[in-house]
Image (cartoon, rainbow, N blue to C red; front, side):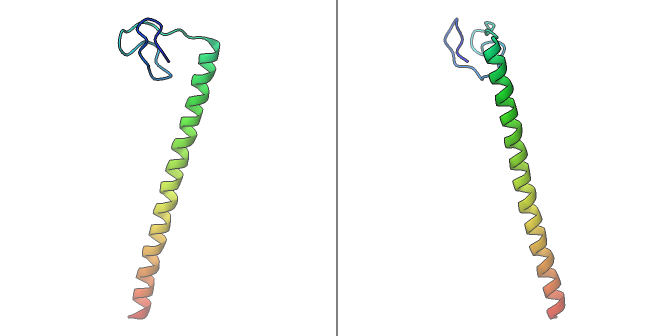
Length: 74
């Protein structure tokens, strides 16, 4: 969001300008944009956490298999 007073580029969900502290205008379009971007951020966080969980699960299965094969061989 570009500040109308100082033309500083702010994060999309800021209510005031980071540079001059002027209030940023809130329109219906901006409210919808903020809501959509927050939903996308939540989905991305969920996807990343699921990727990590899957990776950890695969690693745990591999470690268990190595231990079981090691016990079985010796």
